[in-house]
Length: 301
Image (cartoon, rainbow, N blue to C red):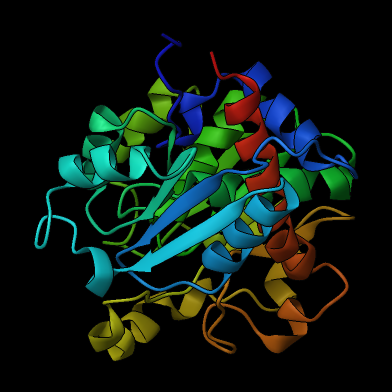
């Protein structure tokens, strides 16, 4: 019998050395076909453009076949329990990826699966996005340790995973959010455990000052469309425009996990400006997905 499978449900399921290894594997121009003759089963409770395309392409690039199933075909805990789905798809694929709402569903999939499970997004975490973010930052600046990353906006799952990744690899992490939209005590404790020691700065201009990376996300995500007007009013001071970016360090880059609501969380001038790295960042979703899959499969017992 082989060893228990490795799961990646949050960034710190990888230690710092493993995280750097995944980033290095992501840049291989000719990755080995570790998925030859095998598949990756991808479960989507909620739709996605980048996640589906990047995971499917990464699987093909490693010689495998992606099997993508939407919520109406799977129905986690409605048609079948998470545990039964994990047992089923462990016999079909070498890896299971799941994009869900409640984080406990990926935890339960992992507990019952006999193959690696990767969290493709949950309400609590977005580790595969953070892998792409860190690779993009390293490509832009040539290093990671010692850089300052400022996240401006809704302190959501993307922000939490980014903060954990920064903590693991020695980046300084600042966050600035409108009142009521910042990290709660549980999130701050979780970041501290990962070594992130987030610096919470109320004023977005002060938070961005001297930063090497300025990062934002949509003010409202899937399922929050009814809050658009309220959130636009609350977040107005946290819009990333040219004046805010001008406060960042020389050579600073702008990141956004996309999709962007242009003119809300960031202006076109920033999204399409010289500091923007949003398209390399989006493309790195595929490269880091490939690196992560290779890491997980290279380590098979």
